Image (cartoon, rainbow, N blue to C red; front, top):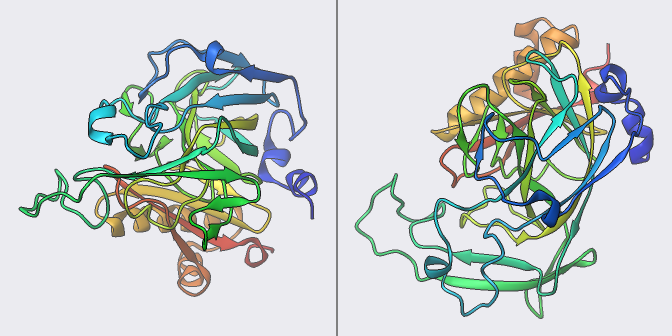
Length: 332
């Protein structure tokens, strides 16, 4: 089944205002964007306002704002925390109201810019195996290190002996909360910095709308990443992202949802890590009961046998988990 064929059978096509049809294509270049955003909130004016079904081609900056250009650079000297994860948008979707849902089909994530186009690094007191400000230890921080890598659709050249697959995805994407302004470094119920590799080309991600227009933000694309984003930094890249955006009226839920050709997924973010897993599995259980005819307890029992859990990040202010089940088990 091709991407186009599967999209026709998606929730987005069945329930969206545009029914999955492609509308007008819009461009959001770096120049058109102007200043980036570092919080998700309802107080910024839309950079773009679109109709449901529109396609938006967005140029994103990398998580470092493009300032790490050499392996001799010092992240501590170059980066201005908390101004990391620059976000494009917000993009307003006409007709979107609280209680609705934005459906975003990720059509493509393409590396942008000169080679070596990928950047990863070690930063002091940041990562999954080091002391941090929240997990305070007396051990000295690890030494800083920067690695610049060639990235294209054929792969990621880690070394002369190791080539990693090019598996691009969007690290940070979401909608505006109703009243809060939440850092683009943090994942939560609105989406944000989930760092979940399933948010990739070929997937549809669903966000509950909290404010007029939905106010979609996007940035922080990765060329590849292991489960957990262990050192705190994936293979960060500038990218050109192609999104097809639809609106589903009167469909709301607590946490982001995702759909692919093969499975549905719910996404939870929290600390400790097990609470993120609990949120994700609870939301999946409730989704199965609400939309797929399951008794809630039976869904809970089935997920104990057939559920799958994906670790997005274990390094951000909140950790992210995605719980999924294959669609073949949902057929009634």
